[in-house]
Amino acid sequence: MIGGGEPGMSQPEIRARLREAWQLESVRETMGLTDVVASMWSECASGPGMHFVASRIAMVELIDPDTGDVLRWEDGAVGEPVYTTFEREATPMVRFRSRDRIEVVATRCACGRTSPKMLCIGRTDDMLIYKAMNVFPTAIRDVVLAEAGDLVAAAIRIRKNSEQQVRFDDPIPVELEAREGLEPSRYADVAARVEAAVRGKLQVRIAPEVHPPGSLPTQPYKNALTYVAKTTKTATTAS
Image 1: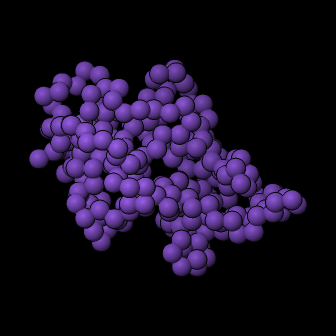
Image 2: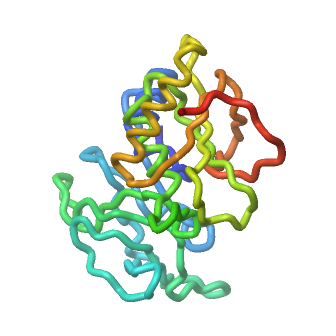
Image 3: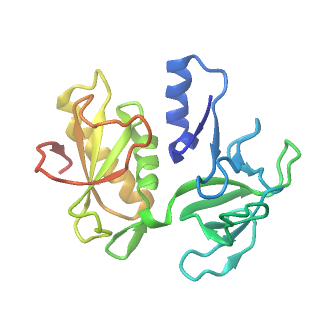
C-alpha cells in the first residue's frame, strides 16, 4: 500500500493497523501538492522518510517559515519546503510555499539515493500555541499513540472555539476514541496517562476526553485534526 495526503502514514501504530486490517506486506508513504506536482516525495524500502524524487521537473528549497531564510539540507533540519517548477508554462510556480512542516532525517540513504529524505511533521498553518509553547496537532497525536495506541484509536480531534483560534491559555481540549473492548471505567485512567505523557514530552497541557468507539466522525478523504465545537460535549476527562 502506498498512501498519501495524511502525515499519519509515517506513524508506526497507524501502519501496524493498516498491515493487520489489509494483510499487507509493505506500507509506504508518498507526498506532493496539487498546485505543483501530485507526487514529489516517496519512501524507499529503507524507510522511514521520503526522498525527493521530482528533481527533473521541480526544485525544492527548505526555508524558515517565520523569516523566509533558506536552510541547509542537513540531518535534523526542520522547516518548510518551497517549490519552483521547470516546465509548467500556463501556471508556473516560483518559490511556491507549501505550508508543510518537515524534518530532514537523512541526506544519504542505504538505497543509494542522495536526495533529501524527510518526514512531514505537520502544517505551518496548523500550529497551535499553548501559552508560550508552539505545538502541532500531529505532535500531540504521535505522543497519544505512543503512550496509549493499544487503547485508543488513531484518530484524534482538537476542539477549538473558532476557526481562527490558535492560542490556548487553558489546557487544549483533545478528543480521543476508545478501542473496542476498553471498559468505560478505564477512560479516566487512560486520559490521565495521555495528559501526563503530552505534558512531559511536549511541555504543553491538554485536557483529553475519551469517547466510546465510533464516536469521532471519519471522512473518505482527509480527517481534520482540529475542528470548531458547535455543541457542548459530555465526556470523561482527566482530572
